[in-house]
Length: 158
Image 1 (cartoon, rainbow, N blue to C red):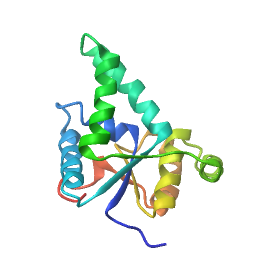
Image 2 (cartoon, helix red, strand yellow):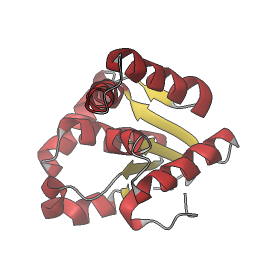
Image 3 (cartoon, rainbow, N blue to C red):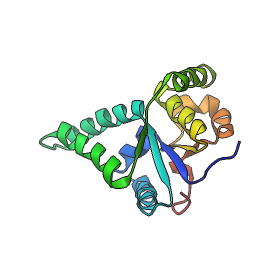
């Protein structure tokens, strides 16, 4: 399978990492967003990951003491879509079945399976923040599917 190195399907962990300015990985996400703004990359996520991003972002803003965390979380989603150009793929019946098959094979979170399945459909690259504990037993399978981790790529790579 040929992979389009200009297409990334971003997990919630990557989308939320940008907000943590103290994280060294936030700079990598910023580089990815800038490349998308310059039309060097096309960024996607799934509708399931978008829902999770709204939830996690709202919790993040609440923990930071933001007056209206839900409003800020929604504003962040709008910014991702309208400014950064994040495209959201809806999960139709065929993609849902592929996600289910990946869940059986990989035994990782359903949202993570949606990112991998959508990346395969687009012939793109699934991008996660780091190798999560539940991913460790199936890391070879994930790498065989072309999954990348923000924590492992050089700053200028994306």
